[in-house]
Each structure stands twice: as C-alpha cells, then as structure tokens.
Length: 186
Length: 186
Image (cartoon, rainbow over all chains, first blue to last red):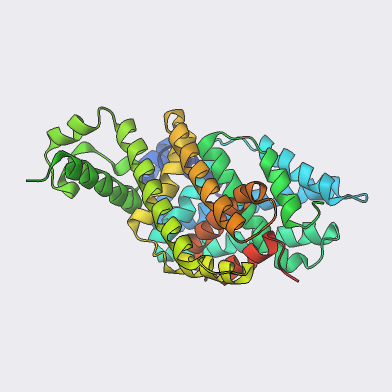
C-alpha cells in the first residue's frame, strides 16, 4: 500500500493530468480518485478544499520544473558559455518539452487564478521561481543586469510556449527572440 | 426580432463569455442558447459543429482586438512618437484591458488548440494578425527590423498579460520589457 506522501503525489499528478486533458472544471474528487487510484477519503484527508488541491498542484509543478531547469543549467553551464549557446540550449529544452497534459495544466491554472483570487499567491510564487531561475542563468552567462532581464525573459518564453501550444509552431523563433532580448544580436 | 447576422454575433459573444467564465468544457448548445437568448436551432443553423463555433469565436475576438489596437495606433501615432512614448501607450492599453470573461476566453482557446488540432489554423491566424499589427506599429515608430521584432514583442505582451491575469501584478514591467526588447533602454 502506498504511504501518505506517495498518495499525495499521486493525487497531485492525477490532478495535473485531468486539468491538462479537460480543464479545471473537470477536477472532481471522484475523477481524481479514479485517476490516482486512491480512495475518495484520501483526497479530502490530504486536501481540505478544492482550492488547496489546485494550489498545491500548481506548486508541485513549478518545483518539478524548477528542479529540471536547474539541473539542465548546471549540466550545461559548467564551462564558459556564449549567450548564443545558451539561447540554443533553451530552444532545445523548449522543443523537448512535449505538450502532454501535465504541461498544459499550468496554463489552465494561471487562467483559473484570474477567476479565483485565492489561487493568485500560488501563481505569483511560480512566476517568482521562474524569475529567480532566469536571473541566475542570465547572471551565469554574464548578461548585464540579469535581475531586470529575468521578468521579460520569463514572459517571452511563456508567450512563445503558448503560441507553440496553440499553433504547433517550431521553437526556432524562441532562440532568435532570446538573442534579441539579451542584446546579443548583431 | 434579431436578424441572422445579429444572432450570429450574439452567439459568438455568449460563447466567449462562457469560455471566459468556465472554460471550453462549459460550452454546450443549451448554455449558449440561454446566454445569447436565441433558440437552440439557431445555433446549429449558424454553426454546424462545436469546432466551427469555437473557431469562429476565436476569429471574431481577434478581428475585434485588431480593430481596437489599429484604431489606438492611428489615434496616437499621428505625430512623431518616441519608442518610450509608444511603450508607455502599450502599457496604458494593457492596464485598461480589464480581464473580463471575454478577455480570458482567447487564452482558453489557445490551450484548447493544443488539445484539438482542428483549432490550430484559427490560432495561427490570430498570432499572424497580432504579428502584422506589431510590425506595422514598430515600423511606424522607426524601430529597426520591425518584421523580426514583431513575433517576440507579441510573445512578450501575451506572456506578461498571462502573468498579470494569474497574479494580479501591475503592468509597469510591460513598459520596461518593451523598451528592453526594442533596444531603446540605455
């Protein structure tokens, strides 16, 4: 039998899948229980309200993504890296990110936060985590004023990923846009 | 009694409101008919499939938004304008765009296009219209290489609008980001 922390992880993973597949409105305790293969009672045990469940799912996604990007940055930024190489790497990572349902879910949760102010603090934490990650990568690359660049870089990547999701477009322009933004185009 | 074109407009407007309020999954003929105050039959008369309805709603939103931004650009770009003034104007327009349900709807439709390839052509048309608009405004401002800048500027604005929707953040950073991207920061 799964231990409580595994159960919680399975509930969160199932919630992200359901949101990605059918949107926030499709998240019901019954469907989450079925998808996560846990009892109905274990959902209410771990998450007192639906808001708790959505908030923690968004948080879990960002923790996971931040870890993934940090690992990648450490893996690739050990030697001297040019901004061109770094932009190419980000483009590669973006291209490798399949838009499976777990990766569609955060977009739905950001929109839901527009409707439900109780989700906004969690959304703000997500964006702050992305900002911090972007600033540290930009800083490591020697881009001037990394703190100021971080927000725009995060917005650019999210905007282009949304376009890629919506249109099936390639990620080539992400690389180009990052180079434009970091002022390294000639 | 409403004429056919008014009926169609009401159906589309109702669809955008419903999507904004509760997501794409909430769009049923019954609910659209109720919200638009039209008969169930008039929905199937104007839109053979639900996909047609979603596609035309997305298209109608973009036509409306493009017209709004073009009017604003013509209104404000009559005299010589500095990029700083233009960025401040875009920030002002963004701040004035209330995130009512009609303005949340396109985000939901972009995500839905990620799930349903039949919606992708309409989404691609939307982004192309935004690109064209951005290129013409950037060109009028004397920004070098406006065609190349257009895509990144559109992505940046969409990414920052999504963040503003999700977190309730201010639009100050949009102005800053546009200045960074157009290379006019010092």
